[in-house]
Length: 251
Length: 388
Ligand SMILES: Nc1ncnc2c1ncn2[C@@H]1O[C@H](COP(=O)(O)OP(=O)(O)OP(=O)(O)O)[C@@H](O)[C@H]1O
Ligand SMILES: [Mg+2]
Image 1 (cartoon, protein in one colour):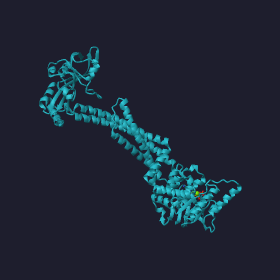
Image 2 (cartoon, chains in turn purple, green):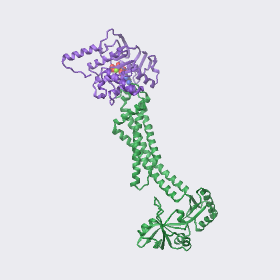
Image 3 (cartoon, rainbow over the protein chains, first blue to last red):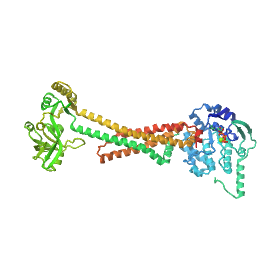
Image 4 (cartoon, each protein chain N blue to C red):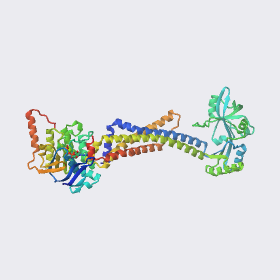
């Protein structure tokens, strides 16, 4: 599904930065991939290229057989809208829109009729467990809730793969774990999930781990026994109950 | 993205920053209102003058000397009356400003020496007494017919007919009173004292006429008649161009051209303020695009096409300028009303100026909104999302 062929991304400048060098990578439908690597190794750059937010400066990127590097901006927008769901570390919700309006946005740009849009948004919010927060604005939501709204927005268009760049980076470990449960469910339903993380325990949920260093892939290994996110979450809940501080984020 | 969605988004963005939107729109409001109000002054003036000229009658010819060296006399009026078949009436006139006195009252007015045909020619009616007759002219009688304004100013409600008045230092007997013709701006047809033209010539100790008025039997004959009159005077003076012959149509056209020029100038001046309003819109849209860089990046990341972004910002600019335009039309019409009522102007709101200024406001919205909108649409999504 995703096919990178000797892809490079160089930031031109006084001292050119080679953020990606000759990357060859294939990710198939329904895979669950974690991307790791030290800061500055090119993880975000790779995600942006795969999500069609950025273009490689060299090499070929085939997305479901289509050559992305040859696409014009409107066509690129269409691919971002239909094939990719992108989740950002900083959520990137529109502050003046409600949760439901934020989730609705990709469908608006798809030109979907209002009634169908609202039905899809309701479905997704229900699935994510945010129905009662749908009329709240981002500033009225916790970090974990905001990230779930952002995931709902990535999902609502039913993309064939979900790209998440450090989705748990700004969350406490319990909220992060809840996000991981969501990803696991999505993956079980057939959506390919690619996530960037610095946290080995988060990466352990994926069935494949790719490590980057200095713009190159230095290792690409399958994980035969990925962690079960639901079990992990249950363990958190137990610990919380044991320590007597029943604090959650009220989902 | 559908137009309804885009419109809803634009309205949302515009109402979020109410004060800023209002101040930005204010530039357009003032511009549109200024165009409408100023043009209404020019348009009102030209309509008033046109109305006056039309009131004179459309088949009136005015013959005046081209310059002060040319002297027209009674014989010239006589000649026209006998030789030009298409003229039904020819009236020689001598006019001057002068003081009329009655008892202790005095009043400055226009004293016109005319012949008996003047009453019908100008469409006056008498409210009392009689008009000047050919006998009055033949005998150089010192008789006068006074206009409605003069009656009020000089006689203060007393019956004027039969009174002795001093006109230009000579004693005259009032024989008639003109009915009110309705004053409008400029020279009032009611503010006049009429005396026999021969008497006026004697008072001036000069045979010169100020003008000869002639009535056409048919307005369609204006052009050939003017040509014939010019020929007669060419023969008389041995040179062409010694007299000016103007039909009412021509006069109307001259006045209209002059007032159109004035109106256009007023519109241009007001248009400049509209332009300044447009620059204000552009300025605010550029600020708005910069402020919302992250929003633009996000919208692009979830699939907004360049034209969706262009449309969004263009629509916001258009909303501000059209909103300002609507309010401006209201303020402009109100201002025109107020100028007409409390100022010394005759105003008339020209529908053209409303349509034009509103259209101009819309054009400004698009014109000045386009650059910021294109700038937003051309942003790189990643750079925009990283923008702090
Ligand atoms: N817009 C840019 N202009 C110039 N250089 C850039 C730009 N964006 C990223 N880089 C450089 O490219 C390299 C890779 O950056 P990237 O953001 O992909 O790293 P990363 O692996 O995501 O790091 P982190 O874990 O800190 O997020 C870095 O050296 C960075 O400085
Ligand atoms: Mg990164």
